[in-house]
Image 1: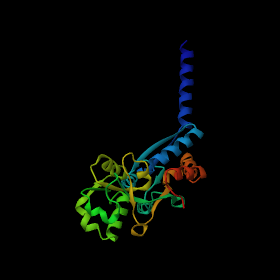
Image 2: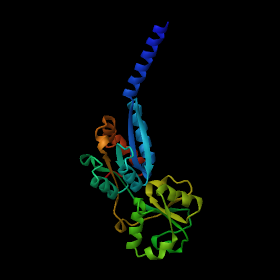
Image 3: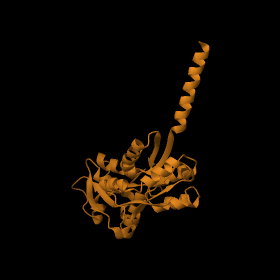
Image 4: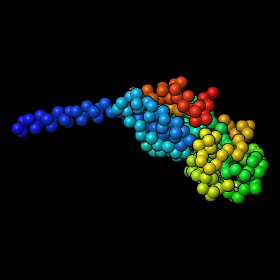
Length: 247
């Protein structure tokens, strides 16, 4: 009886070890404005590749880059601007050959109807939500636009700093800010706010999302396969549905 139980235990252990060997983790570090898109794409990929598990970390691009630099697990990094991708390239923490553009977006000002209707009308507002420019690309884009428009000094004391674009939108939705600088794709998903006006493109660099495999990701076969999937026609169709562009 003891021999039978021992054999059964051995079989179970071998089964569990085999299952563990087949399971694959893909660690993602992605700009929070891509959350819905990446959730949908990772779910679709996982259905076609049983055993693959995604571990997702969404946040401000600068925050994510610093986490990767500090050793946080990441196989794929997608930033909301080129600066933080270049930062990790400089630290030799991403596979340079894999770096490419994933998508493009547009900066807008969102809020409840009846608020500001143009850039020059922002001076009439009391509180304006913006991502912290040190770690949130949308905030950096917004401040550059305000500088070029000659409004930065007038609005400095009105700015409410947020940890990422989603928090900016929450401030506007709750009425804690009269409006927020966010991406067009975020505003399109808002429940109470809407796009009040688009920021003229000549005032800030084009919102570009670079993507890359990290050094560990380049050695992860499943991560590399998902990275290739992100360039597929199916992925581009999902991006378009959420308001992103790919060219």
